[in-house]
Amino acid sequence: NSPISTTPSSLVQETKLSENDSSSYPFTFLVYADQGAMGYGNNDGGDRTSSWSNREIEMNNIRSVHHFGDLSYAQGAGHMWDTWLDMVSVFSAKVPLMVGIGNHEYDHTDGGQDGKDPSGIKTKGGFRPRWGDFATDSNGECGVPVAKRFIMPANGNGVFWYSFNYGNVHTIMLSSEHDLSKHSEQYQWLENDLKSVNRTLFPWIIIETHRPMYNNEDIPKNTKVGVGMRNEFENLLYDYGVDLFLAGHYHSYMRSCSGLYKGQCKNGGPIHITIGTAGAALDRVPLLRSPWAEKYFVQWGYGRITVNDDSSLRWDFVADTDGEVKDTITISK
Image 1 (cartoon, helix red, strand yellow):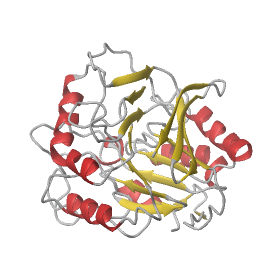
Image 2 (cartoon, rainbow, N blue to C red):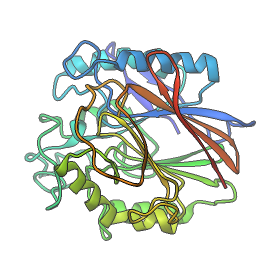
Image 3 (spheres, rainbow, N blue to C red):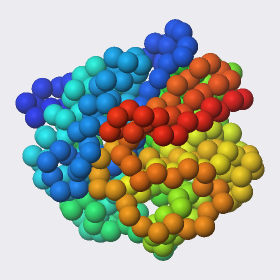
Image 4 (cartoon, rainbow, N blue to C red):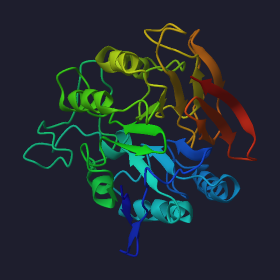
């Protein structure tokens, strides 16, 4: 699989991720969301996250970086895409950068008809469920700049949803900005993809998307979206034994209990982690009483996943100020 991004100088930068590269364990990769272009309003710590991603290549031989939405916050300003691509190039020239879309890349209320939507959706305003909070956050981008700048594995729907294997891990990138109800194109693709995974070869399944199903911040419109997502496809996470569900959107860190399913811990579901802490302005909001929320931090940082073998995986939340590990958990099979 060959993710490709264009740089401001119009050169093509290509890094390849081979599922056979992990000839030995452990191997490590980084994950996060919600970064922003350095020097513009919504970014405060994104350049540090990029710098730490580069250091992780030297310190821990990371194999890739996964960024699941709200990348540059350009919102129609091409020069901000250029600034963000320059900022992330310190590491993306060395290891693959696997990206997904967020509300600030895609959400729109007009102009999606007549084949103009790069994801192939024919509705005027994209995905707009009754429980949704899907407005004009892309400021007219409608997914076009990110779709033109990145090429992701061609087994799904471009940059919007796809999957890939690396070592013994099967990673699925979804679009929380598109329909995931039972009869939708994305749901059917996801179910077929999960069915096809050989769990002997790929015992670990990780799903990444922009919006979380579970979060403990008291933002009613966002909580409503999380519940809507649970109603749409949480059953698939349970049925196919997904190990981790990673998301952003909230600019904070939250880790759930193990086995979270239908609001209950130790109930056969995955661990849910929100890590929208890559640099965008941090949240300062009240919290809900959520018994399934085990850790919560309002701090910039990134997730580091170390796969030890087929039966052990370690998760670390690393602060981007000093590299301190603020939260760690080992998942065992």
